[in-house]
Structure formats: C-alpha cells, structure tokens
Amino acid sequence: MGVIVLGLMLLSLTIWLGLLCFWGQFWRLDQLLEVTETPTLLESLPVVCAVVPARNEAELLPISLRSLLLQDYPGSLEVFLVDDCSTDGTANFAEGVAYAVGKAQQLHIIFGESLPPGWSGKLWAVEQGIKKASLLTPDYFFLTDADIKHDVSNLYRLVAKAEQENLDLVSVMVRLRCESFWEKLLIPAFVFFFQKLYPFRWANNPNHPTAAAAGGSILIRRQALERIGGIQVIRQALIDDCALAEAVKTGTGEQFSQSPISITPYPLQGPHLHQHSMSKGRIWLGLSTLTRSLRPYNSLATIWDMIARTAYTQLNYSPLLLLGTSIGMSLIYLVPPIGVILGVVWGSWAIAFTGLSSWLLMTLAYYPTIRFYKCSFWLTFSLPAIAFLYILMTLDSALRHWQGRGSAWKGRVYPT
Image 1 (tube, rainbow, N blue to C red):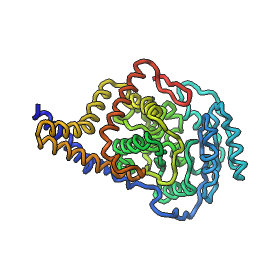
Image 2: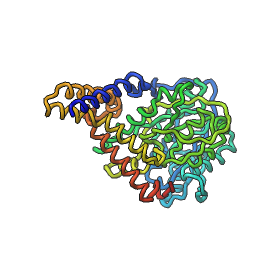
Image 3: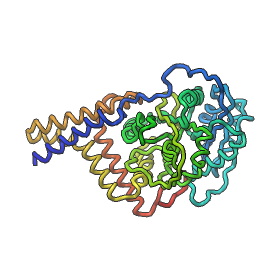
Image 4: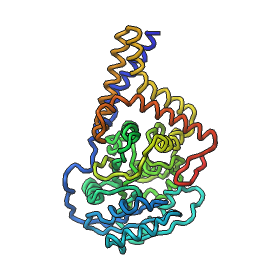
C-alpha cells in the first residue's frame, strides 16, 4: 500500500514540475493590458462601435454603461445597447444614464426580437447589435457585457494594442469581483484554472493552436468578423468568447453547443468543427488590473450554480471525460495533502516529503493569482480544498444534465 501511495505522490510531483516548467508559464500573470500608466498614442483613430447585450441589467447600468460612455477614446465611439427582452426597465435606465452624462446621441438602444431556434440568447442579441452598428461601417466592434465597469482608458488601450500589433481580436479578462468570503475563496481559483487550461502565452502565439478570449471585453476587427462569416457561425456557442477566438485564430467557421457562461474552468476537449477554408487571424488575451466585473457572487450557492451549469457542457456531456477530469483533478490537487497526512500517520517521511513538495509547488503556482486579487497569503494553501469543491460542482453539473435540467442563464433554459 505504501508503495502505491508513494507512486501516486511521485506522479503528482512530476505533473506539477511539468506544469510549472513547460505549460506556457500560465502561473506568471505576465500578459497584462495596462503595462504602462498611459496608453500609447495612435497616429490614426479607428471608428469603434460598442455592442452591449443587456437582459435585466437595470441595477448595474448606472455604473457599467456610464463607464463605457465616458471612455477617453478620442476617436468615434458609438454604443449599441440591445435590450434582450428585459422586464426591469433596462432600456429606460440606459437612456437615463446617457442623458445624465451628456451622451444621449452616442447611445443607440435596440429592442431585441424573440430568440429564434438555434441561437443562444446572448449571441442573438449581439447579432442584432452588430447588424445595426454595421450601417456605420466601423473599423472595430467592441463586444462587452452590461456588468463591466470599464477603466476610462480601456478602449483606447485595446485599440492601440490591436493597431500596433496588427491583431484581429484583442480581449482582456476583467478583474472579477472578489469581496465576500466565498469570492475570495473561489474566484481567484476560477481564474487560475482558466489560465492553466488556456495559457495566455499560448493563446497569444500565432503558431500555437490554443485560442481563448474573455467575453466581458472583446475588440474585434470588422473585416475579421466578416471573414469568419459573422456571429452566426458561432450562433449555437454558449461559451461564445472562446468560440469566437477559435474561429478568428484558426480561420474556421464553427458550430458549437456549449455553456452560457463565457468563462469556464474546464475546457478539456476542443469542440467539433464544421470547417471551411479561411485565412488565419492574430489574437491576444490578457488580464486587466483596472477594468472589473460588477457581478456579485456573495454565496457558495451562486458560485456553485455558475460552475455547475457549465462544467459538464464543456466536457461534451461525456461520462468518460467526466471520469478522467475527476481522477485528474484528484491526482493533481487532492493527492499531495492526503499524502502528507498518510506519511505522517504511517511514519513514512518519503511519502510525507513528496506530498509536501507537490503541495508547495501547487502553492507557488497559485500565489501570483492570490496576490493579483489581493487576498490573504494563507489562501494559497487552500487550493486542494477549493479543487475538491470544483470537482463536486462538476459532478453536480453532470447530475443536472442527466436529470434533464439543461443549462440555465438569465431565465432561459437551453436544451443540451
């Protein structure tokens, strides 16, 4: 028994050494949008149309929409807010915000049509916004969510990044809210898992197949969107940001069936593609220290639901992938602390030391994320317990699927 446990300890240690040394240096958090205090000056100022899908977002619009309308971008910026069948007066609140900041002529409100078959709700709203915005023939579309508070220079930095590096798509993972106990415990790990599974350096390397984006803040060239066939080519993508990045980077039109949340920690298997030949594009994904999400997750239940409604969908509803993911996460995250305990109880210092070494490497990898979110240092040691919760959330996601409850978001339930 001791030999088996020691073997598992050594395997876990080997995996962590491989992750730290050879897995895109995901843990370094060195892909940042705000690398300088002021944005680089642009010789020309492209025309930008922002598209904001909004479904029952009246509470957040006074902050989020205001921050978008007050961007310091000196070029032309028009904002198209799509009221996606809201019942809380979203459109009225949006108009009030625009008038309050003196930007009424800059805001265009579109009342969304009923959701047609074969579309996710968010992408149908985005499609309607892009259709209206296209009449202005913009150079870029800025796709952003209604729960994002933009730093005043966010758009300028995105445009400068795209223009100077000739990028087709630029995206930032905004700073997620991390205030309550459960947010501090689970949200940094959420970001950590995403970066481990989609190393940003790999996504930003045009020669690497990894592609990813964060849906809260995406700037995409109009020509690039037209080249892949428009939003309709990913109309069934419920994880729409990564689907869009995949289509742009690989030059492939894609049909997806995934989850409604744009950020998911379990992208272990790429989607099946229905391809037609296109030219490949260049993308960039990084972190923002200034632009942030306003969406609160004040309880374990709210975070649990966020993960559970997406995880099994990302695993393509495969029991084998579910089993492999559960075993893999247990081996990587749970085995080291268990080994430390068993090694001490059994008096086997080899097992205890090997388990402790893996746990310390795990802590070392997690520390930059904890520091980025300004959380307590001691939370770096909690990753095994957090991973255990994420495993349970994934299993619950599969249970919901087997019970026929589907994926729910904003009052809509999507069939699997």
